[in-house]
Length: 314
Image 1 (tube, rainbow, N blue to C red):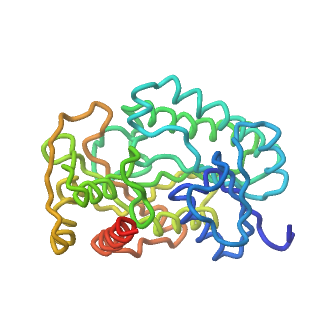
Image 2 (cartoon, helix red, strand yellow; image 1 turned 120 degrees about the vertical axis):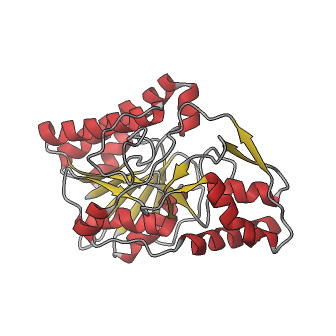
């Protein structure tokens, strides 16, 4: 490796957010390695990025990789909110032990770590909107509980072992490249449902209120935190705007109607692990790092739809 360039390991970097994050990291002249579970990355990675197939819970593997890198961004997570609710013990066991091991080994080597947590689940039901980082954290899903537990372990290792970490709590990513029907990503799934003639399922009359951030803005926010965030700080990363599921559908309905697609909505009972409203205040991140979102919501919807249309035609 060229010792003059900062070397960054991205755990889970072959996924949707990770593939966009890698592009942003390359713009900063970093040398990037991606660790993922798949034999080949799910999303194509740019030239010059090293891909390592393996599980970051493998002690020998993660130690070898940490020895060669100055920074690590932890994006990997084995479950999503609805699967964690179905089996909370699996959620805990698959995610907690390997991550705590990662904290321990990173601390030993003085490697800087960015922990990508969850702005959508760690707070629980909101007392006020938008949500500040000082808002109480009372998650109502196993996914949120485990994410918050990982944050607490990071603080523990910072206090007791000198772990150099920064925590990021992102909003809901959307945009080009997000595959529909995988249990996360309402916008891609809703658009694809309409394009396939299927009803769009929302839970409750209008659905939940969420903060959606275009994926390139989210990736840029993580890089800004890596470069300029204060150690042992937690940063919200969101747009600060809340929209219901029904608002989203009405917003993109105009786009898809021009191509003859019709929207059908299927209202289902509310789910117990869905917080009613989640909108993040990113003022601290903007103040500390200078980051700000660049992609307007409607522009992001348009880009997403154009990509889905292209994929459908292939």
